[in-house]
Image 1 (cartoon, rainbow, N blue to C red):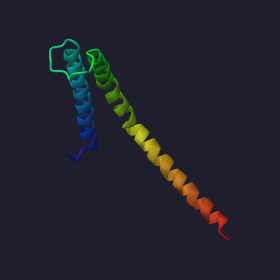
Image 2 (image 1 turned 30 degrees about the vertical axis):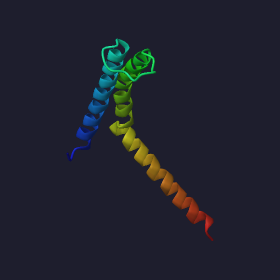
Image 3 (image 1 turned 135 degrees about the vertical axis):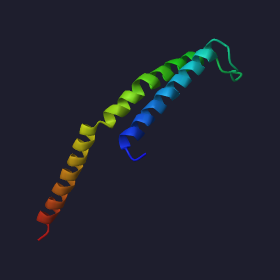
Length: 95
């Protein structure tokens, strides 16, 4: 995969599918349809359900916002400008 956008797309889809898998497991655990470790309360299945839904819905959006082309360009230009200003201020301090 040479296209970085394709790799980012697949990473977002993988995060979404992982969230759905966690949500489904949590739902099944809360309903007592799957094996559950002894000593753990069943209500933790609802916690997994909510966490999986949040992962499936929020994490891909956060990834897309972080990987936005404009944001990446802005961050790289800011980093370049700050390094240039640091270098120029170092030159001024030397006699």
